[in-house]
Image (cartoon, rainbow, N blue to C red):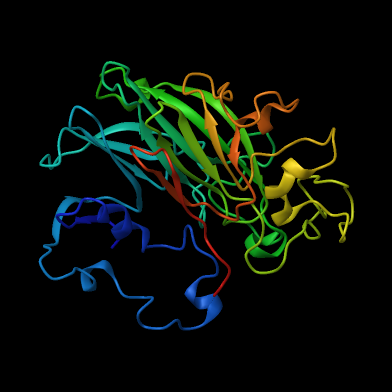
Length: 328
């Protein structure tokens, strides 16, 4: 369904309709696992229930990952490659390029621009928030580093191409020139070795807080505790060097970094964060406001594998999280 957004009369199916294309957000691909049952490969066109109508509303897109409706009726669509388009309404057939983040977005496998949120007070508060994989192999290093590829060696699923994640705020300055959607970086980190289990989604809660999800950056092909890579353990997870149980705390165990010994840094991986939309800092009423580590203060749920998508109940504030499971 690349290049086409489809919608049933229940708008919630837009994201479902676009998420079935490509490999992002999942574990091993069909080629890696072998043929899957036919029902897994069924498209949304085959699933429309009786009484529903399927209508193409926005076309001409390439791997759209997120659709957001602004309070004023505008429709923002993020593409995996880092471009964001805006439509004046759901009936608008001509999109305007709102922002082009392709130079810094690592668009490879399950990596890319995957999270988008609109300020609840938009357009009076003219901000759009993005969450994407940053095309760099070290924070503070060259951007882009990989240019949307992962050569062999190190190999995408062999030793992995290290990357990081970025949460940023874009200001809508009301111009058709996409370069005017200026970017303010709020948070960086989310170290990841393998091309899945990258960053996830963004949502505003009824409390006005900005919620952020991210995977643990580990392999989906084997039980990963940080023992692989070239060099081994390229993200320098503790205790460092050659990693082995029971002391290893890398790979999938990054999601458990809140349980690390005192003094070791807490990571953002495998967690849901609740942050101030203006600064990216933890909110004072988060569960761990007095923790010595600033990342720990941001975390409201941890121990997750790949919380690729989540939503927030509009009245109870409950988090409903879609956490990608193992190959089964």
